[in-house]
Image (cartoon, rainbow, N blue to C red; front, top):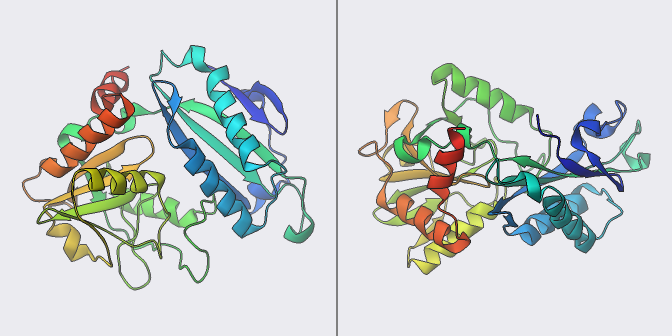
Length: 301
C-alpha cells in the first residue's frame, strides 16, 4: 500500500508513522475538529474555504492549533505537492486537516494540540456507479445533534449518531446512505454530505440551522446562480423527498451524486434528473475535469 507523506506536529514523514497518544483527547473523547478538501487534476479546490471553515470550528471549540490560517493553507498545499508524483495512479486526492486539543484529563488545561495534514486517494469505487443508476437513501431513527447541544456548523469527530445512522440505514437497504432529521422531524443532512431536491425546477435544501455549511453545498448555490436556477432554503420533511422530481447529494469527493430511491421508494422515474446532470456538467466545466468519467475510470481499478 502506498505510504503518503503527511505533516504531523511540525514535521514531515510517512502517514503510516503518525501515532496518536492514547491519552490524546481527540482519541479519548472526540475532542477534535477537522476538514476535508479535494483536488482536481492535482489542483486543490476551494481549499481556502475549507481552511476558513476549519478555523471557525477551532474558534468555536476553543482549540489553538498554534498555526495561522495562512500557515495551515500553505502546509495543505505543500502536502499535495509532496505527494504529486503518486497522484496519476489514483486520479486525485482528498486533503484532510485535523486538530485535537491534545493530551489531558481536563479540557481547560489540555495540550499541546495535535495537528495533522494528510492526503489520501479518493475512493471512487464507493460512488462511481451511482452517477448512472443513482444512490439510495434511508431516513434512520437516529437524529442529528440538536443545535442547542452542539452546533452542527462545527465539523468534528464526535459523531456516534452518524455511525448509528449508517447501521440503521444498512438494516433497511445495505447500500443506502442515511439522511438524518432533527428533533422536529425536519430533514437535515447525511453523514458527510448535504442534500438537495428539485420540485418544479426549483432547488430546495435545508437551511443551515441544523446542518454543516458544506463547501460543496456552496458550490451548488454558485452553479445554480450561473444556470438561473432558483434555490430555496427551508424546512423539509420526508414527504418532500418522496414526492420530489429529483434528489441529489453534494459532497467533497463525488461533488453531485444523484439519488433515485429513498426508503425503498422510487424518486420520480428512478433515473438521475436533468438538473442534477446539468449541475454535474457545469461543475466539470468549472474544474476542467469530467467528474463522472474520472470516477468511473478510477472506480474500476
